[in-house]
Length: 109
Image (cartoon, one colour):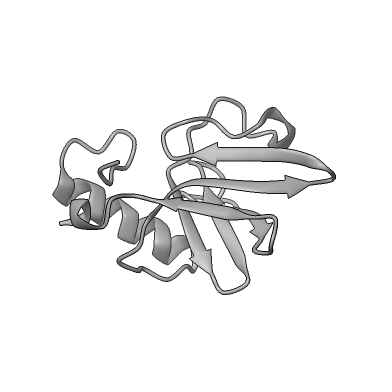
């Protein structure tokens, strides 16, 4: 999958928005960009994907996931009001039950 940010019209704008979200969420900018994330929470398999809403249990409404960042031993999932332009990102522990799928490495350019 080619790297994108929802509502960004082109690659340059997507990079600008990604950088702004990373800065606001205090997350590192890396060449490896997460497209999808799967994890186990309270015995339930949960998945999120850039461009789709989070599970309803996170109470983010229909806000789309804008970016997912790998931050040491955790992941930060950002929607508009959760780490995007205000609020705190949704945080998921990085462990043996979590798995990230990355955007195509050559598609970040």
